[in-house]
Length: 110
Image (tube, rainbow, N blue to C red; front, side, top):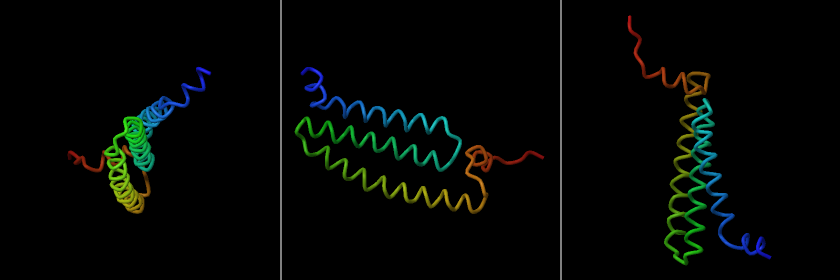
């Protein structure tokens, strides 16, 4: 009965949100692909949204749910803009490597 009552509380949601946040950060740091970096940021944002929604629900404060809706709308827009930028960069360079993107801003010394 202790295990069932443990899973009936908010702890699994906190653990899931922490896993999503750390997974997003790890993917952002480990992958060298521009599309994967955009997706990793979206995963981390969704983990943060789950954390806000869970805390808001169990604390009984509806302000957190309003923040979640606002952040979801903003992150959907930023994800769409980021995806458009990734597609345009791929069309121009035929590559999604972050290393080439870093080299794009450097000037050659001759």
